[in-house]
Every structure is written in structure tokens, then in C-alpha cells.
Length: 91
Image (tube, rainbow, N blue to C red; front, top):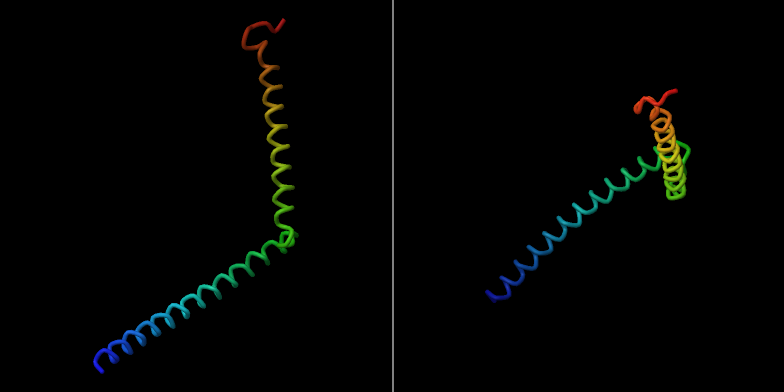
């Protein structure tokens, strides 16, 4: 009977631990759902549907790459235009 009592206590302890873990996980799930809703609302306020976020990121990445390329070209052109002044060959 003593062995059965120990098994029962262990099972109840495990059940209580699992119930606590489930409660904690449910809280984390609710928090994650609220965070997701907040992010989705922020996306919509910026005119981006959350379902289309990948396309928006790709568009922005392309625009940034183009802007960087244009900036580099402008820097190279400026550097080339300044070269005569560096070498003294302005005339």
C-alpha cells in the first residue's frame, strides 16, 4: 500500500506541474497573439497587408540596393571630378 501511495503522490505532483506548465504556456500564447495583432495593425497603418509583408520587404530591398548603387556612382563621379584639383592639372 505504501508503494501505491508513493506512486499516487508522484502522479499528482506531475499532474500539478503539467497544469502549471499549461497555464504558463497559455499565457505566453495569449501574449504572442496580442503582439502579433499589434504588429499586424502597425503594418496596416503603414499601408502594408501583413500577408504581403514578404513582397514589401523585397520591394524595399530592391529600392535600397538601387539607392546605394546610385550613391556609389555619385561618389565615384565626384571623386573623378575632384582628381584634377588633387593633382594640380586643373588647366
